[in-house]
Length: 227
Ligand SMILES: Nc1ncnc2c1ncn2[C@@H]1O[C@H](COP(=O)(O)OP(=O)(O)O)[C@@H](O)[C@H]1O
Ligand SMILES: [Mg+2]
Image (cartoon, rainbow, N blue to C red; front, top):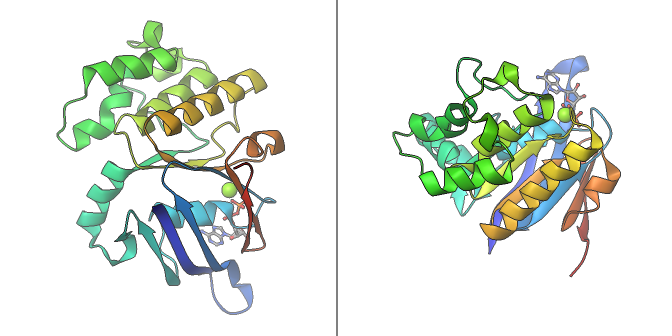
């Protein structure tokens, strides 16, 4: 079953002579549990695409279906709840809340939804993210790699069906990058989560099940890397 269906989405920023056609009739589908990387030059439309998949921005035309739900036909409130329950975002900027500890930052999306964290899963995440000893630390007491791991924990805590990551390893060294990727891959396998990850790093891109390339707003699907 396809977890994600993108049907001919287009996006233009601005109008008239300064208009930028950031996405041109982009269509693709991703089966549940697949790990997809998105590559392409800077300014090619990768972040615009990812923002549309998470309904952080709306396309001029086209549809995005997540688990069969047409996200742009939802009302704002419905969409907010849907997004919180079904999509995990990981950005290059960690966007942690400075006053909250590691653990509090991680469970924050659940609290927003008046849900209690599953202690067992929280412990498991702290463990695989290698943050057990840092659970009561504040973000400014952590290294960049540790902060990014907290942001990943926060994206995973709700066990979202879809994880959207925009250059999540952009601020990390090679060692930390490999660990972060391994972790995401493990999550996607274990919980059958679908991951769409933008990366500049070719060797990281090649570790995915499938690579998509965006070039000047046009998407090319290179197909499955292995069967
Ligand atoms: N909010 C915006 N307003 C105007 N133009 C934008 C905006 N966001 C992105 N763009 C333009 O759209 C194109 C695609 O940008 P983006 O999706 O951020 O590319 P990438 O993530 O691949 O670097 C670029 O030409 C960029 O300048
Ligand atoms: Mg970008």
